[in-house]
Length: 167
Image 1 (cartoon, helix red, strand yellow):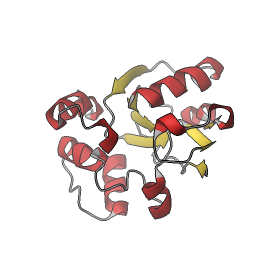
Image 2 (cartoon, rainbow, N blue to C red; image 1 turned 90 degrees about the vertical axis):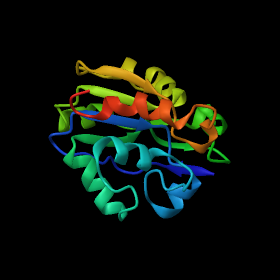
Image 3 (tube, rainbow, N blue to C red; image 1 turned 30 degrees about the vertical axis):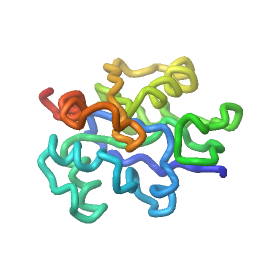
């Protein structure tokens, strides 16, 4: 199945960027980031930033923006049969345009990866090709995916606290 990512969620004052790899099947169907009910993304970010994880999607998105959090995926498109990052077909990978993104959001100071695969894809397909790359801190976070259930929620919550502005 050929997959296409969503546009970034960001505002001019965004200071932290959270990157996934590519939305899963449920997210693609719902046209919402992290729509799978077992994914902890919204519950973790809501707890850290102080908003209601059960509120309507536009309100959750607005809450991220209000806290200076931007959200996107490393990949613009790829082919994969399931929602698993391991199923991404390497020769079909097309990364998003991060040069344009960083120009539009010049205050980004921290890039957080939602899992190891997002970090690896960025390191291979984006970072070496960025012209005038901004000075940012890169942080690999434990994936919020239900496939990453081995890491306790409390550990994920502690690691993810770096998305809070004064962390």
